[in-house]
Image (cartoon, rainbow, N blue to C red):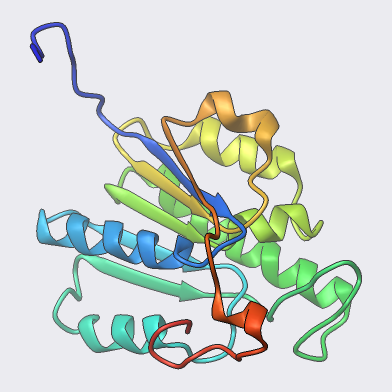
Length: 188
């Protein structure tokens, strides 16, 4: 294959979506690759308010990457089809989603970061905590040299033409279907 006609973009928009596990893990992998390259990264968590393995890992490496990594955990838990979690009202879920979005938007548009990862933002949009127009605004106004990663189920397909890379995690098999609960260290 000859790459003479290929060019490198200054930044890309990456989406990890689908019904299977691995979306956040792929975002973490992207974060690791970017930090290893010397980039400044913002990891913004929209949903998971409980302490999960990836949060513990990020807190552990924050002192090592103090000038290169910012972590913002702003969600109140999952909110699906009117079911509230974290014993919060829909209004409280929306308020926290908007605060988290404002942090992500500022990071993505500032030019200070080479990568901004918005983990579970797709869920926040799908569940009505944010609007599709909010995601559209984030995509359209990000800094030209800032790459953006959007994870979570149910990416709004009307925005697919605005992204550069989109991967859908599809299940071949999952132990939950056999009535097994999530395993610490593997599933969370």
